[in-house]
Image (cartoon, rainbow, N blue to C red; front, side, top):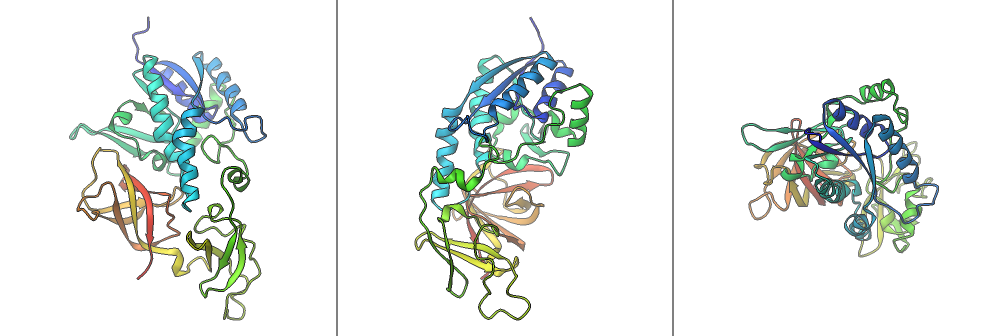
Amino acid sequence: MSHLPRVVVGLSGGVDSAVTAYLLKQQGYEVIGIFMKNWEDDDDSEYCSSNIDFVDAAAVADVLGIEIEHINFAADYKDRVFAEFLREYQAGRTPNPDILCNAEIKFKSFLDHAMRLGAEKIATGHYCRVRRNEQTGRHELLKGLDPSKDQSYFLHRLNQAQLAKTLFPVGELHKTEVRRIAEEIGLPNAKKKDSTGICFIGERPFREFLNRYISKEPGPIKDPTGRTIGQHVGLSFYTLGQRQGLGIGGIKAKGAQKGGGEHTPWFVARKDIEKNTLWVVQGHDHPWLLSPALLADDASWCAGEPPAPGAYAAKTRYRQADAPCLLVAGADGSTSPGFGLQFPEAQWAVTPGQSAVLYDGDVCLGGGVISAAIPHA
């Protein structure tokens, strides 16, 4: 019998989780791979890559000499992630299913399953790090060392129990180094491109996908003067800041100056659910797109309690530089379960349903779901 700790690695078929398994094996852990299947509504379609991914994951396990188990969490995913995702879209918000999937599936269903297999820890190929703070005794979630790949934003809902049982080996590396290791040890997926698209739903045309689940109710598209300039296909299908696919290309803004108005792109700025109206503005820096403050609810803090009000940095969307901000206590004087953020520099297209994630340097403190963007007074 092996006396080394057992670690269960989520093998996705991608290069990051493959190198994760390799690094842990090198460190002397007993490694078992698990492939999670979390989506099966149209598994035979051209978009569902889960069968290809499993073949890749199995090939990696073979090269590394580890066992792999195929496990189906599709029912959990549908109940706990997808149903919530659709509810949010129907309410006119833009949710982030990857965040929910990490909290509900990868670090709940998967973690529970791994513990049943006698594992001490789980590991995934996420670009972030975990550190135990010796002074507080708490586990901290840190950004990955590769700033262009850091995924702490997606993992900000992890709690102390989850962080204590999780390893993120590639968080210490840059992506180029991960690819180099994969090639060096002859992994079959060393050159496989990174997956994009919604967690487990893959790279399918999004509007067509949503169409199957959400009823469409067309309505007017209006500019800030109240003029109707087009028709939307249903508010759920648009997100704030969107400029593609509005179908209103050549319309001049009212009173547009010569040589400027006609070709300035239109952006989605507001959604009025009650009146089923989509409001659009011209120009990236239109005041309707800028918010000096936001409110968030459903807060989740890595330390198990909210940080003290004060100066931090925050991301209001994934691909964004940290923005300096002030954390403001909620109406009841605490910062949980809701909180407010104030920004010295107004943030662009702050979108209800997305997550506002708070940082103190490299430490990810947690965050909440944006409930309202506060416009300029």
